[in-house]
View 1 (cartoon, one colour):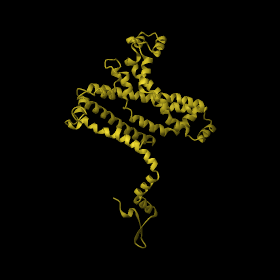
View 2 (cartoon, rainbow, N blue to C red; view 1 turned 135 degrees about the vertical axis):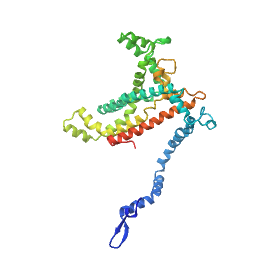
View 3 (cartoon, rainbow, N blue to C red; view 1 turned 90 degrees about the horizontal axis):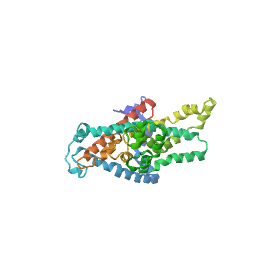
View 4 (cartoon, rainbow, N blue to C red; view 1 turned 45 degrees about the horizontal axis):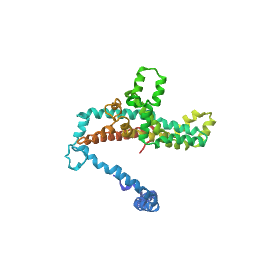
Length: 350
């Protein structure tokens, strides 16, 4: 508990207490904080008005659907949720150790493996691209290259999936073999590889994940490099000049000047990536392996696609429980990664 002596100064000569000027300023600020906030909002009302659409979108698309999460603790589907009886954690017990455990844990394992490889190989690529763009001296050439690597981000998932299937398809079902499959067939004479090429590499267990990760990097690496490139160009030119005076070459400048300068940005982006580690989108994976009888189904099914397949009557609660578990683990990963980064590098998201 605070005492008056903590905020007042005692004068032994007069036997009275007085308040320091610093404490008077703090008290005045505390008394008028709401008035100050009101004046700030009135002064910048146009900026706050621009926040209204975003707040409405978040309320409608992020918070309002949370009311349906109660279906994970009820029996049946989420239609007429309030009329369904409560079953507590029975749905979670079913997907953890019950009849749905095999499918859920297979999907969860695939989610973690796919996301981990995507983070391992995909996270450094935007940083490498940003460092590469920084070394291109011609603004015209740099702009053209940036447009080329940003463009895949704006191509729809359906088109990206169609291109993937066309490039890596086999000659089964009357379809012609893909271009990349033809090139691999010309280079290699392995009977096993030729059998996989005829089947279609994207439909095989061995090559499904590498193809997914490579196409995902191609789709997102360029757009994700924008943040890192902004951090790179913000490095002071005097730092480069000092490194050049000390005899540092290009690689040494990257190692001792650029990378330490953008380290805080890298850590923040890494924490955010770890937070979304298990949030593997179902759209692309669902289009690449929609058939449960296909060979790639057991490696391409993630929690989101597994939950989407549970939209049948009396099974929606299992899907919601699985997605909730996935999101809770993602939240724990964010908190853990943020705590580690705060202790190790003194950089944190919050």
